[in-house]
Image (tube, rainbow, N blue to C red; front, top):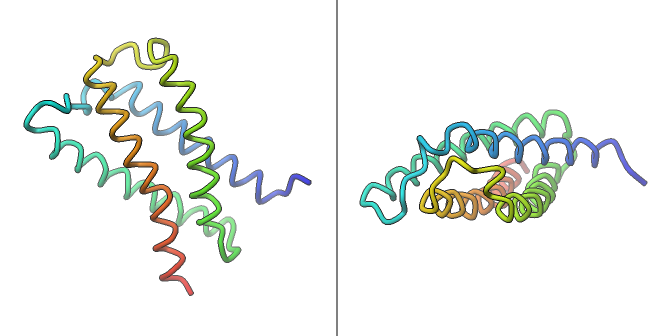
Length: 132
């Protein structure tokens, strides 16, 4: 049975994925640095810090809409699964989605993405711990 809360979780999962993907479609060439350049670590850390802040805000908003005890953990798990599945398709068709990115920038995006999904899974665990 499809519940309203599952629908909300899936909607947020898709919106988070869509927001991140559109950000890199429009701004990827400006923010993604070749991983072999010396300034990659700084750019990467700033991008991940911004990602963590945005994800935290998303989780706070989601928790207000679904106050059930494990709502943010559920969003982290389902959102990561949905995003990874869609991203597999996107990376497979990178010429369609990221035609403006170089091979090095696509590698930088993939590195960002792997770390960002780690944040997507971990942030809700810390939020749940602090919200007993």
